[in-house]
Length: 507
Image 1 (spheres, rainbow, N blue to C red):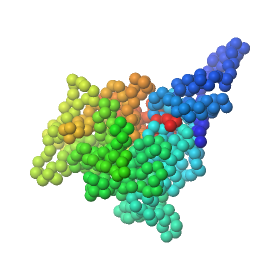
Image 2: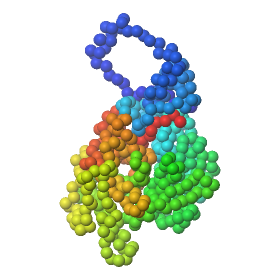
Image 3: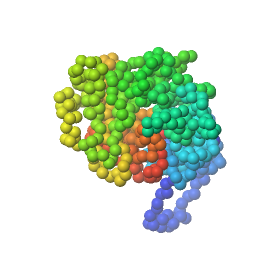
Image 4: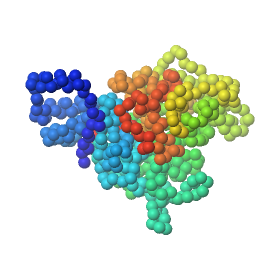
């Protein structure tokens, strides 16, 4: 199915411009653009961003034929910037909106397949152009929203060996889980919001291998398009007897063909799913960490090729700033947990494990606070001033918003985490349910270097009817502005699932 887009942005023309256009009507040469030679039109299409290309492919019969040729030949498009993909109430269940920050246009994207309630809810973006989402009964599939291409995945009932999928009344349910201290079965409608916590995908379409983090206990399972069941990794290598804290996030690295998984303790594993049997290797040993629902951890490959871990801290806007959970509090608590496990009664020298440096070479590296200063800082929280306090005051509802974003390079040789003060002056970072992406700002001046563009992805607050979307400044270490302030053309999604970032692709 070919996705036909229509621009959701109307360009207003001033009265003066209209009068000038009317006065020169007789002088205008009306070209027959439908008569352009195919080879010339292919060149033009190759210069367009993907949403504009799809829309151009629906302009007229000759252009549709040329667009089909473009796709059949798999001709390349320019490097694409991420777009926002989100539901709009006025679009109904059969369409979603795609906002392009580079052009300021909003495109209406038709969805293939039968409509169902809350159709626009996507779980995660995967490889460029594709999203991992679920149908009305919670079964997952891969979808390219621009082309309508789909790839079926095993049903949710095969995840975690849960074959019992109906209750006594024949209703679809997910196995019992803890809800307010009581074990209760969950309906599929609810389960589809949290059955798939994090997703990594190797490729789009029928060649995809998919790795997911899922309940119970944030375990790992994988599948390939065409498989009948999900395959758990709990009995493979170092994952045998893995602790109950589970995994926070996963990643596919197309440079080495491996999946990466970061557990809650900060340990990192590589997972090779190319062979007949999966191979799991622990490449970085983390230290005990405190747990909680006040942060999200990401794993990514930086432009330098370094592996990085990122902690995104969030706090509720109605809580006093002095009560906010900070990354320094977490570091202090982590040190206490580690010393308790070691049993030596001594506090860990945090500087030994947190060497702070700039992402790019610089002479003004900043030293971490020593342990004594850190202890005092955590004991006297009334002296803490949250740099995001100004933007927090603009929220009118009780919400949760990002208050810190901390990034570390994983030094595999020294087995240490190196704290970075930024991502450099050449890239912007995009975080959310999408796979983390670094974009060179020299190619896309619309985005700010050394900034992170954030969409809401709090697993603890699904369904994600929140608006934690903003732009983070690494230099100032604060949430600089709301995303809607930077991109005013987007629709107000206050009462809808939060947008996700997707890099458009036809293939």
